[in-house]
Amino acid sequence: MEAESRLLELGILKEIAELLNKGTETDEILSDVLEKLLSVTNLKTGWIFLIDEDGSYRLAARKNLPEALSRSNYAPMCAGECWCIEKYRNGRLAKATNIMECKRLEDAILNNLGDTAELTHHATVPLRAGDEKFGILNVGSPHKTHFDKEELALLESVALQIGTSLKRIKLAQREQELALTAERNRLARDLHDSVNQLLFSVSLTAKGGASMADSAEVKETFAYIQELAQEALNEMRALIWQLRPHGLENGIVSALRGYAQMLGLDLDIQVKGVLNLPGKIEEGIWRIGQESMANCKKHSGQTKMTIKLAVERNWLSLEISDPGCGFHYVEGNELPSLGLKGMKERAERLGGHFLIESAEGRGTKLSAKIPV
Image (cartoon, rainbow, N blue to C red; front, side, top):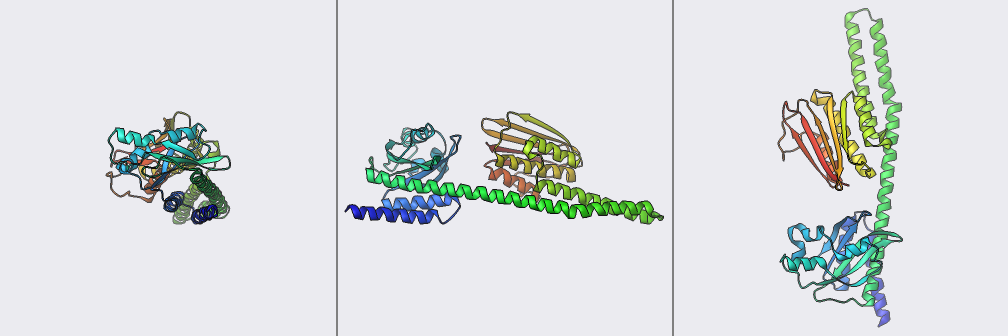
């Protein structure tokens, strides 16, 4: 009997390991693994919280949550505190725990949020790989108020597998980001060493030709060629900046000022709070700032521009404005340019939102709010 139980457990772990090794999309993998775990253990309900180093959490996967926890797009699961997360944060959740009454369920009953499907308890297991922790796995069933040692051991084994997979995905994403940065730097070097130098040579040659020409028409043609070459050279330098943001190592404010100076913009930067930003958020703000300054240079008819950055209560607020010609825009309509779409997508990829306010003759204001 014990041998059969052990074989069954090994079979479950093998199936879950195969699922974990299939993909690199965290939420999709967690959802598939949770579904498999519930089906092979005959448990009814489960959910996974991923928890950041600062203690903030998000609901990454869930299966068969009762009505009381599913209402308003799972709002009862996405806000507030509970005992399992509290124990995880203070280091008291080191292994599979048997059993924790669910504060979220108790709150749902107290506030008449709906049917709880007679779910009252759940087991809680930390997700970890070595000393690194990623979140918690919770499972339960109606009327089940106890998990035996074998069940807890199985849940702990599954949780370790999940933690190892999350570590693998994290390392793969970091390697991918480093490879992308290296490729951008290589492309920036190639553009600088080839196309940039050619455009500079064209500009100098046109300038020399204009000085030697006797005909006014020929002088005018050379001057026009020089003007086009200089404009293309400026565009190329701006592109190289976007590929390889020199100065970002000195902080986002320094980088934005340097880029504005290169474009010939009179930039006023106002900072509130301490800008100790994660690298991914800093780069996202940098790219949004670059695109907005390039748009101002090309379209606004103004050289003045204001950027306001503020960090308050774990939120970064970004506001970019210029007093230029503006454009007709109605909230909810399709964005009028790829640049604006790109800025919106960057903000949303960072978990934030992006707003546009503009009207013809009244300037433009772009604003983003991003969690940090």
